[in-house]
Image 1 (cartoon, protein in one colour):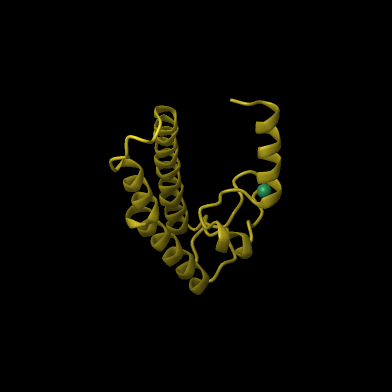
Image 2 (cartoon, helix red, strand yellow; image 1 turned 120 degrees about the horizontal axis):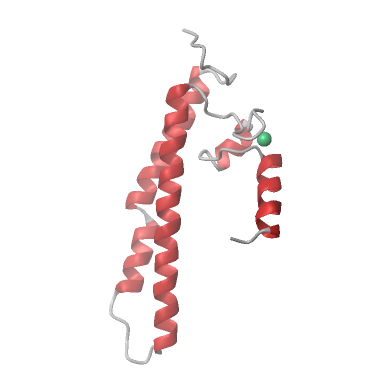
Length: 127
Ligand SMILES: [Zn+2]
């Protein structure tokens, strides 16, 4: 079967591999060490811990949660792109992101060249 939306050259085996990888990563985020890490921070701390350290730990937890939420969203979007046949294509230039890069970051939407370009621009214009 070949749909008009099929813009990647990935075969069914590769697509299945990345779908599994994304689902595992999603499950890992929802049940995994990040949640345990937050739990550790939330547990009662001894009186000897100073306030400022506690406050910075709270900020750390908020940042972790924020990162986790954003990553989950990206994973869901990657799964949608798998379903629509757009997975593996760079959002910016339309080139293939590359299987090796996707193995490390299956949720990536930009090829390495466009990602570096984006990071360079973000450094010039801090939000
Ligand atoms: Zn690109």
